Length: 176
Image (cartoon, rainbow, N blue to C red; front, top):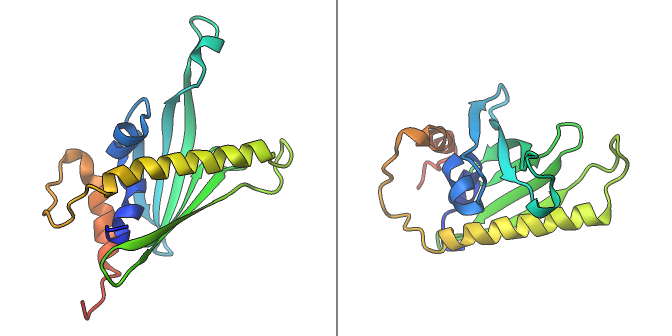
């Protein structure tokens, strides 16, 4: 990719992008804090429209809510969870910087081996892989057209992105 690695990882704190790029029903309410180990944690929930609305009874709530949690270990690695805390769907995103100033991004998915409802099915894993691929493809359209030479003009809703950028400053090389 032609963008610096930190832009790939930044997505987990950019609440506006979830609605605009991934078509969530509403902008998620996320909180960001640094824990005692120095990991930047993101907590919140996503509100989505359930698929196949025509299969739902009239007047039924067609909104699905999912817990979202992420641990940002550096400007190049984040582990995200979507779903219940006891059986989350896990997505690990790593972005390795290249000499040209871009990065190589990799996404890995994982499900717990066991949970109260039993072992994950191939269908569940396939769905997680497919959804992760779709989300990454949606983000790539933005990244391919992002001008990172422009000085950011943050707005009121960008406090989480500003917190992430401050976190990233701890990792800046002295020789750069």
